[in-house]
Picture 1 (cartoon, rainbow, N blue to C red):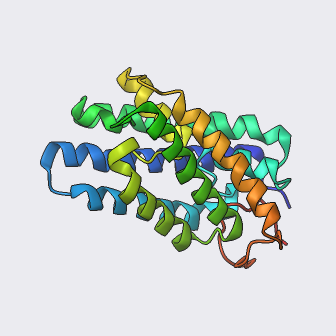
Picture 2: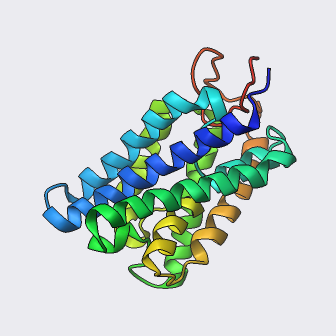
Length: 228
């Protein structure tokens, strides 16, 4: 039985909002207090993704990322008609969370806006590779703890250089509210290309079913309402 679109979109809005509130929110708290450290911020991102997938995957698949929705569509596991509504819900959720951060902290830490620390070329390639690996793992095994661990791993490595976004919505919400658009295009193009590459490599690495797919467990890349 398919989950009604309204419920799925609400789950995507809430899940993406949680990701932006707690993830960039941790960066804001670090900027204000200096108590979390880089590893602490990376851990918050990973724990948030774990919790969101565990709670919301049975409703919407817990994509919480336009690149993830694209990867599912390209792999033939998600209907074309729901792609744009999902992406819009994710962008709205990210923007609302950034507005809440602004209300709580002002412009502290620039609301966790993702910016290249080095060259734009370096940031683009790094974001592409990070997104590719994230979505390849997700397509092979979408278990909450696996995905949370990968996000924490990649945020630990890539965070100081690009913000380790891997997610256009995560970058869009803070950029829109803060009004900071420096090299913002790469936080869309790199994840889109990374998603397409992950789908292609996943098809090559047969079998096509996720290695740890278990019907009773929440999985990030599982079409909403799929009971198989």
